[in-house]
Length: 106
Image 1 (tube, rainbow, N blue to C red):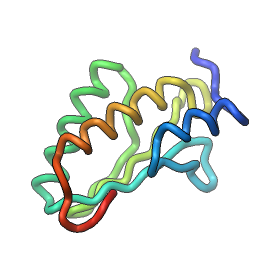
Image 2 (image 1 turned 180 degrees about the horizontal axis):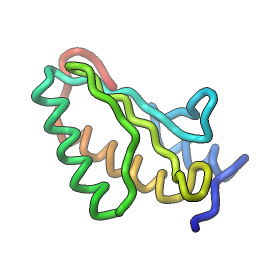
Image 3 (image 1 turned 90 degrees about the vertical axis):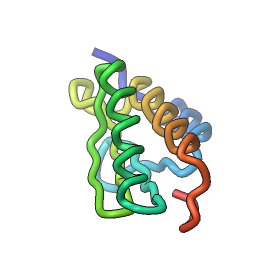
Image 4 (image 1 turned 135 degrees about the vertical axis):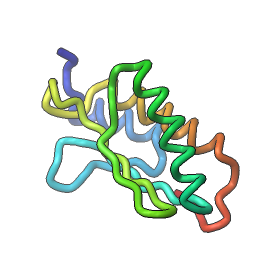
């Protein structure tokens, strides 16, 4: 079981993840992503799903048309671990790979 990140270790990890924040009421990090349309949002989710499967670490997420809400936590460890930070970076890479979103940043 991976060790949870707390205090300054977690804060430092989040500095490298603009847009990610601590979730209110959960020991997790979260971010909202916005896309051009549903197809682009779904393509993003597909890319992330393939990366998550390789890591064997999966996001909690939801999709509503052009938005994807992502929450990351390591359920087996009871909080945020390095696995969540690594997956957040991969998710950000997938988002950047989608190209500019005309509706604003995620």
